[in-house]
Length: 77
Image (cartoon, rainbow, N blue to C red; front, side, top):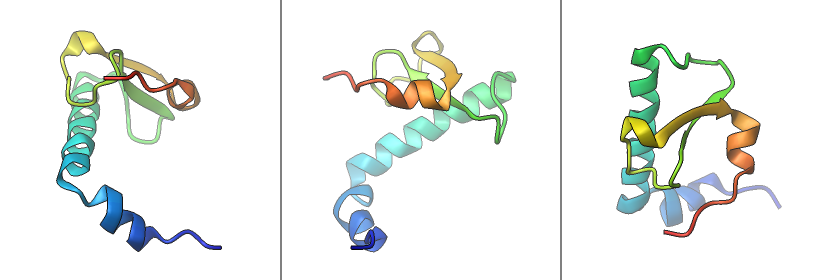
């Protein structure tokens, strides 16, 4: 069965809370791009040490390989 992206958007990604979290992750990435820590297409992710994407303090952000960051288990908030 093929993946239904429209349904996912409607049921999950389009919810205000998820949109807020996505915007916060993008803000963190842009902040580190301005500092020169990451570049577009470099294969790096900006990770949040405490697992909270809304916490964009510089001390809470880390740059690591995409595979390493995505292999981490999410912390329970």
